[in-house]
Length: 190
Image (tube, rainbow, N blue to C red; front, side, top):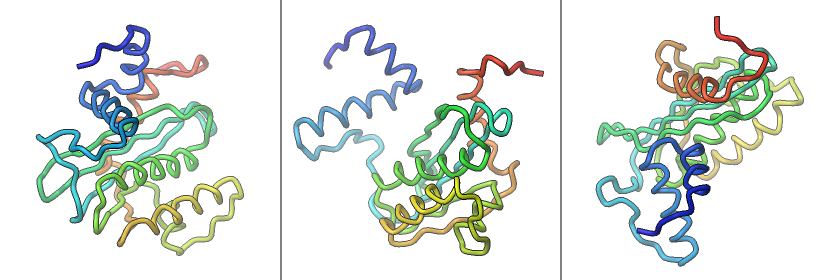
């Protein structure tokens, strides 16, 4: 294994708290540089085809306020979590955070080439906008909406479905984890 400089290793730990995510990221960079198509992790191969479930959430402390996103990609056939991702995205509204979480989740899901992806969101507004039941009235949301619809064309079948917040607790926990690690200077926990 290649030894990385300590400063780079610290930065990678900030970006990818889980060692497996850091290793996958470094392996992806090395493979891209070598222009080879090798399996990255034989213990958990990337799915090709099948159905995947994507759980996403976005939130902000204040609206707008310090915002973060969380995504979980699952393979229900094998009963495994393929990827988890969370990050702070700066000062945004709740709706922007919800959209950006879904965008990041879809980008992650593309690597697994699912035949069918079910996207679970706890924002009824976003789901209804994506399914064409509501128009996107806020101009600030339109670019995110369009990006998601463009990303959706890269999958054979995409479904956007609403789930209650209590059923999306794992993605919500990732959002809070990101916000707790990088709290806004003005935010104090109750």
